[in-house]
Image 1 (cartoon, one colour):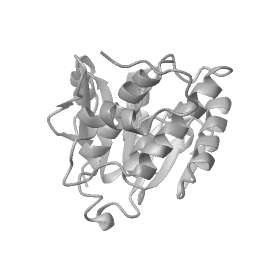
Image 2 (cartoon, helix red, strand yellow):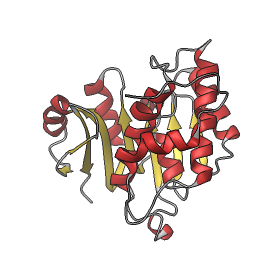
Image 3 (cartoon, helix red, strand yellow):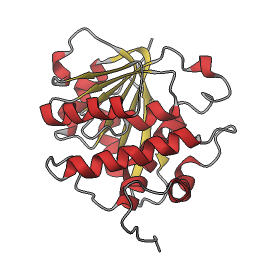
Length: 229
């Protein structure tokens, strides 16, 4: 059973570590640093305060925020960049775009996991985009760009990695996301297993890896598809 939290301004980083263990584990020797854990704690505090006036997430329990949002996002980061700790040049300069970023998941946790990437957060809601700018400032993130537009407005731009999670109109957004993937790039979907078949059918030219079940979930998966060169 999860331990309740009582009257804390920032969530205990030791407890965050415990909750994230099933999702992060050890990936080629990489674990979250103390600074990463402090950033997550600050992030949760910001999310709670902004949630009181802007609906960023329906999840209000801090421990569920860690597992459902950070855990899932970091698990996806681990699938994308398993070597970034031991070989930083593997991800240096890789351009990642997170479509419909909302409260910043999975984009910002991926940036914490692989700080060498160049991250673009695409969020059409003005208040949510303002929150994302506050997160970037509070966590002193660099090489991060928050764009307050709809993804379809980015005609002609492409990225090495495009991520998609918990968006409305999944089928329509999927085709938009696919167009933003550069040749040879990867599309990363955090979806329910029932959606995987429709994603494959919608993007038959993509090469799909076997989906990876997300820990502690009955049906959530990470699906990686590669666009042909």
